[in-house]
Length: 88
Image (cartoon, rainbow, N blue to C red; front, top):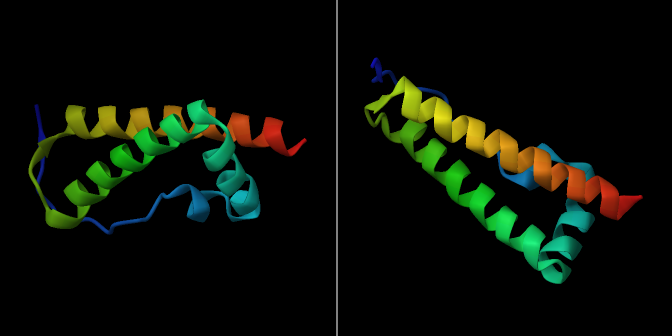
């Protein structure tokens, strides 16, 4: 498998940057919904891992990197659906 070794621009993907219009809902859900809080924590961990790889120029296979990105996207989709449901 190919490895990533070039320096990348680190784009921050925390939920407050992704969905600024839902900041209040994010805060409320983190405090009141255990499942949301658990997924939020997982999303934060995966995002931190991706940003560390991007920012520190750590060699990683494209497959491993893509797996992390897909995991983050899946978590973001679930969290967004929960936020929208809560906000309506």
